[in-house]
Length: 410
Image 1 (tube, rainbow, N blue to C red):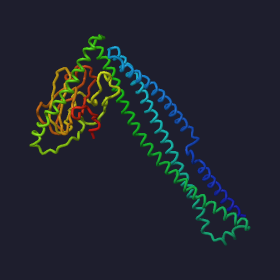
Image 2 (cartoon, rainbow, N blue to C red; image 1 turned 90 degrees about the horizontal axis):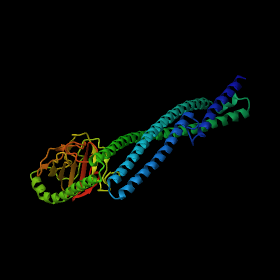
Image 3 (tube, helix red, strand yellow; image 1 turned 135 degrees about the horizontal axis):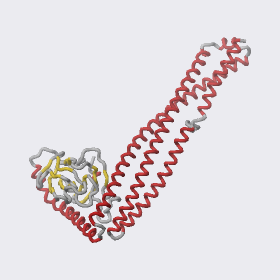
Image 4 (cartoon, helix red, strand yellow; image 1 turned 60 degrees about the vertical axis):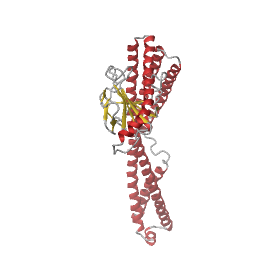
């Protein structure tokens, strides 16, 4: 009787372990289903997705309105309408990015939850696997004759043999399950790292858009201040801006040609290798607040933005991004001050809104030399009219024609 009881207990233990294996194997399609906490997190994520989509649609409408105004005749009223629509769009962009930050944090929370659950399940199945192996090992030590003697009939003998075979098969299922869970965990952990990087990216974009909003509001305020809501003053300001831009364009073309021989002569005594590879003119981080030919540039209906704007504290040192000839160092007092360097192979660079100039025209600078200080704060030296705030305007030109600086930077 005692032997029969032992066998029954053995069968019950095996069935419990076996049933655990079958339940696990049936959940392959969704290994984290039926967890209320996770379902609530996923509900919030889905809710944020819908809000983000709606905000993006609304922002696009304001962007289209701004584009429509840009196609119309240039006027003060028109320019203010462009700024108003771009401000509304940026405000929606900021709300969108805030939601994307929240969504990313929820996704990371969900991943942490899934990883914890997965690790718990792995530990549980490892323990079950140990029990399987103990049972198999215990019975593997017995010969078929011993098993036959211990059982009361041939039926019990074959039943136990079949059961042991089922246990061995179930070990394979459990091992396969463990492999699946480990692979799923590796994917989750990789996704979590990717999501963390995405979260940091959203946070940085959020900072940029918040700065952009301040810039647009500052432009509107300065525009109203400079024109005093007068259309005549606005048109005079436009003429001044266009003249300055045309003067720079013409200046660079002429200087590029004149500088060729001077560069050769100045470089003849230098051992520094020739190179047109440019480095960043400012130390990191390199936060771009306006891009080359930026569609959000507020005066795009007047002229394209010919460079990039780099966010920088007032008075940040500007370094020469490559060896070059100082073709212009224009100190305009309270107006727009800038520096132009001519490099090899038709490359030239321009640095605008500078608050201080440390180089003289008709001289040569080496890579890394400090050529001046950044500016851009409204009402300060070198900033010029309609500046948005402290930054460096940086241009790269090829044979006098503006090109995207990002294509020449590391």
